[in-house]
Image (cartoon, rainbow, N blue to C red):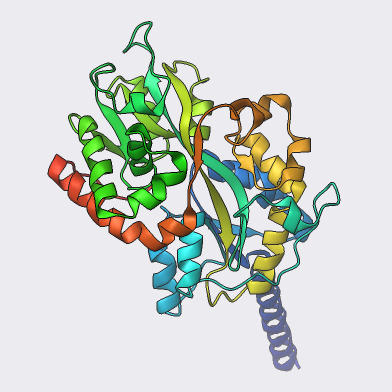
Length: 374
């Protein structure tokens, strides 16, 4: 019965092949079922080494990591089109609050977070602002400014007021194309007390006062959008000073060929939080990922690869003296004037300030794409 034998053999081969394909598909689904979106560059690398790879190894899950340029527009597009492809996203504190208020993020305030490594409860271990109904904090970061070492001789800038003093410290300035930080700086440089910055900026007179102060840096103004761009602008001498993310600047200033110094006075301190876009098909896995990533040890591992500040106080015990000396909220800079960015205020007022800022930019004749990449 050669025909029946061959037919049976063929049927068996087909069945085995289909079974293999099913197993392969199942394995792909099992090992590629979480998508995490964050800021590209050194920050993403610190997250990959700090907790993404360890999570994959411990849980047997392959995390698909993507990048974005900040803001909540992409999250809104995904949620409104019922095509949510991100499971966990890294957001600034203000964006986390805005997205939460708009219903674009899952509420996760009832999730159980691990206690700190020192036994403290999560509620007591996380720094202020690191927990909200839709987010769990991962880093404390700051914006400071830096200056080219060849521009000012023995007289170097030391205060935030010096950033706007183009008579004493001539030369072009670089700023991020966003109203946050620069408008707080402008008021502080104009004599407004830290505690009065946001109440002043909430008025039309306050906005005009900030913009008037910013007029001093209008000539030759350079706008940047990527985290490494101000490093290049300062090192190449294209600007005399530039706003810069503190961690990026602190790290880059020690690189071979670096020709700039950091100024920590007036730095604006902010947070980043993880959130889950509304409608994620992998919410339980996303919650598991956030729990793992926000543990004392995971945050310390991340910060050890790039000196942002951890959002857990208990993580500090795992950091070396070298790292502690670099983190924006570390003991090394406690004597320098700083301001904690009011994320809730920005969540409520960003649109108004953005409109005023963009009008000021247009008047300055500047062009360039908006957005930022950490």
